[in-house]
Image (tube, rainbow, N blue to C red):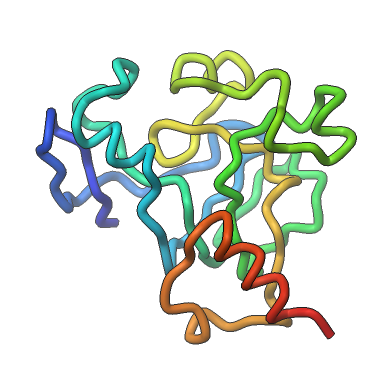
Length: 164
C-alpha cells in the first residue's frame, strides 16, 4: 500500500509500505478514503515532536472502510463498515472517557511510546485508538459526500448534516 512516510525534518514522501496486519486482538485495519491535515501533523513535519522516527507513517484524522477486525474488537465495527476515526486520542477506560468527556482523557497518549504502553499497538505509526470509539456511518454517509474533514468544527457540521 502507499502511505505518507516521515523521513526527517520537512521530508515526507508517499512510499510503498507493507500492508498492515492485525497485531493485537483489539486492532482494526481501515482503508483510508479521506483524510485531513491536523496541526499536530505540522508539528511532526517540522520535527517539533521528538517521538517521531524516520519511517513512521503520518496521519490520524481519517475516514475509511474497515477491511479487517481483530477477534477482541467488542464494538459494532464490522468488515465493510465506513467509519470516521476520531481526532481525539483517548484511552476509553478512565473516568472522563466513561463520562464521554473524551477531550479531557486522563491517560491521553502523548506519543508513540505511550500509545504502545497504553494500548499495546499504534495506529498510523504514531497514535493508538480503541476501536470502540470509531464512529460507524455506513448507512448514513458515503465517501463521495465528504470532500474534506475538518475538526472540530467540521465534526459538528458533519453530525448536524446527518441529523434525521
